[in-house]
Length: 506
Image (cartoon, one colour):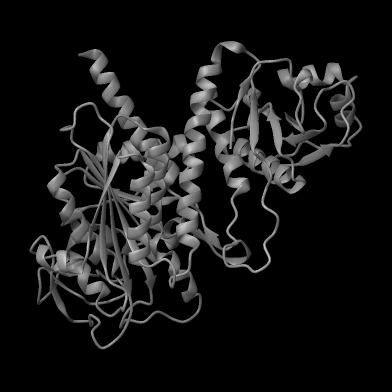
């Protein structure tokens, strides 16, 4: 999708539809005011007569726009001006682009850059516009015999009231478009069924990304023989009961001028289907356990976004991919396994398998001498109990890293919440027979899961994102959300800016 930027008089812009944001009270925004003047107060009269109520997310198509070069107008409500913050802005964008896609229009122009949103700048607003447009056109109908017509939207013109910020708008749209592509990939990988999206399939997708990158992204796939030789017995133990072979996927992006610059590492949990193993899950909603690889999907999505933006950073993307199934070879409760780090783990519950694949992946990350490591996983149902489906759980062994991720989540509007990682919780993992158990009981389940991972992340600044509540939607809107691709991409872009500032100061 294209996102051209224009500073023309909006009344003279030729497009299938002009998207016009409107507050409930007060003066019209600059572009809307120009359109109102050119159309003999069409917008003002609709509002005054009560034909359009500008509640947040309300939309109304005006099929004829006399005096304007646009074929149509789409009025979009923003509510009260003083209450217009990020959530309202994004809600209105989603409503607008959903309507546009349903109208099957090929091109639109939007005046949302005029909307004041707290301290958010033009680049942020243009990024959100691009992400919303990409979100609206996303479809997953691969396995439907009768497919609905694909959305026709190909171009979204971003209208600016001033001409001095065009480059800022273009940069914001470029990032938003890349993030939108990354979110779409993460959603598709998450939505694919477990009989298609296997560990081998994920490895093939990594190799395809590598081919598409033009040599910027190098890919290494460790098969079961390589993992056995390495000593990654914890990762292998999870997949032992499955016919699908386990894989460790490593993608390296070299973007920094200095090839030796310490990389930032993202590690994704890639359990392509989770039955719970011998500790079998209840049958209800077990189909949703195809989403248990959404941490891995977000790593793939972030890699896709990075390839679209090309930041000057060194990055490593690691995915620990396995299928957790019960059979005669499967790991049993009470088994003791030796991890890549050398620590022994008593497996008290085979359904706490995500930490068993991640611990070896975190140990593997040590070899890159990373500047930071962030793992992403649908790890605990306890995260849903604690935070619902709005915030991702965040735990870290480094307060600066935690703050950086929180700030990135706020900027991307893909928010996380910081939970404690105190030593007192570590005691819940004590085992009578091994160095530690893989569960710590019901109390503070999200925290003790992170405590387990922290034992394998003592060599670098590390953070853990528990996305069990945010990675997918259930019910009628069932499907992967693509979170936290936005947060992760913003975190990496912030690190690039940090390096740039240091270089400018030196």
